[in-house]
Every structure is written in structure tokens, then in C-alpha cells.
Length: 350
Image (cartoon, rainbow, N blue to C red; front, side, top):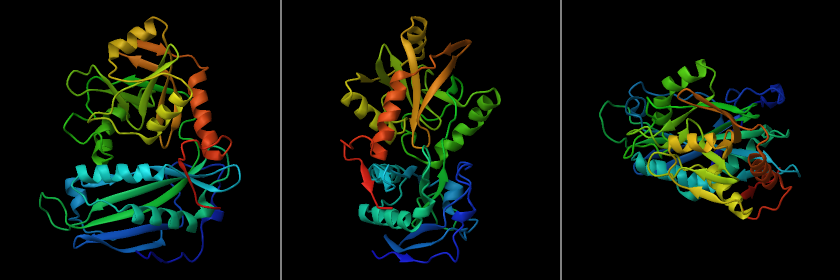
């Protein structure tokens, strides 16, 4: 489909202090928008970023049909803009759409829209190390009547904001054994808006006690480690990686998958298996748990400094050699300092 383009009258990019960027508050000049009507995606366009005119009876606001993705555009060492594994975001968006009874986005529409929008707002991709243009694809249900059924109309958007590092210090996390983020048979493995809403109350309580995130456990026994609120979890045990399986309740993180592939390429053993809270405690008590880290688009790879499990506080080594090595390798592949041996990067010029 041909994408119509309406340019803004004047860019706001010159008003932005790229050395002091609050995460998720300053948005690029334009956004992509397309509507699903009568069984097809119609009228794709890029227009100035701005508010939507919506009915108070909008289906997504009452019945929760809303999904999204998170991805980044950043510059390599030659100043060219790189998208990291964007087709994996497209695949995961459609996985979420199927689970939430929403229409899928064709690959060519997703990629054409994404690349066209980034090219138009290329000046919003920062140049400083560790910064990027954070991209938010979003799909919402737009039927404007009250009735519990899947919507017949939808709106898909792509917009974004420049960002710097998400975390500036090692994470303090607490193992959560009371509240539940997701249960098997639910929508925990979909990137659905409601998953994040369910986690906000317990996460807010933890943050008021000095923690960055919660480490969620399973909904039945609160015995099996799952994920953090915004990231997947890895433990480094005797120089080997351990991460929970993604079976129904854990988001299939693209950074998580990338870390697994890079680690195996570097001959670091990776174990994808159930991890219990007692196992985590035993690893620490026996001096075998030397590092832990979180992975996600916003955080990339964030070292974990403290894990609290009940009354025990696990202080992890600040050196984090494996965490640092994996983080550096991924960054260097994105910036061109190391070969992109997996062909993950999509280059779209300056």
C-alpha cells in the first residue's frame, strides 16, 4: 500500500536536550497510523504526532483489546541508522494479536511503515553512546459501542521518543510471592496492555521500599521464577546461564533470545529450564550464583545487584564479567564494532 505523508510545519527536534532525555516523555515529530475496517487495513498515513479523537465507548478502554511492541533505532559507528531484529517484533506483535483476537499486520505493511517513519524522523535518532529512538508500535480496538465481544475495527500506530539508558545503577529486585502477574492459560506471554496494569500495584509497593522491580513467581505455588515486570531474568551460576522457559506466562523477549544465541556462540553454556526460588537461594548460599541480569528492549542488559527473597538479601558481585561481556557484544554488533554474524541489523541509511 502507498503510505501518504503529511509533514509537520516545523520540527521540534532542535528544542530537545539530547544529553538530558526523560524516558518516554518527548516524542518525535510524526507518527504512522492505519485503520482496520471491513476486514482490511486501509488508509496508511504518516502525520504529525498528536492526539487521537476517540469515543468514550471505545472497545479497548472497556474490554482491554490493546497490544504493543517495544523496539529501538540507533546509530552505528558510521552514523547509519540500525533497526535491531525488527521482523521479530512483527512476529511477536502478530502472536499477541492472535491471542487477543485482533487482526494481524502484514509484514510488508509493518516494515514499510516502520522504515518510512524512521527515515522521515531520522533526526530524532540520537548520536550519543547508549541512546536510541525508542519505537512503540501499538494496536487498539476501536468499535464504539458497549458489548463484550471482539471489536471489528482497529487502529495501528507507530510512534517513538528519544531515550538514554533506562537504568543507571545495578537493579535491586524482590521475589514476589503474594501477587500474580500472569497464570497459565492467560495472556502472560502476549505483550498485552493489561499485563502491565496487573503488575502496577505490587510494583509500586516494592518501589516505595527501594526496589526497582519485582521478580515474579508462578501463580499456583509461587515457587517457580518467571520474569521481572519489564524484563526477562537470567542467573549466572558457575559461569553458566540459567533462564526460565517461556511457556504461557513469560514474554518471549527478543533481547532474551539474542542473549541466548550470543552466549552459545561464545561457548557459554545456557540452560533454559524451570528455576525454583529454593534453587536460587541454594545457588547463592553455596557461592555459585555470581551474577544475575535482566534483559529487555528498554533496559537491554541490566545487571542485578541485590535480590531479596523473603528475609534474605542476596548481594551479588559488582564486577559482572559475563553480564558485561554479553552486553558489550550485543552493543558492538549493533554499532558495527563487531561483525553482525547473525544478520540481525536492518540498515536504513542516515
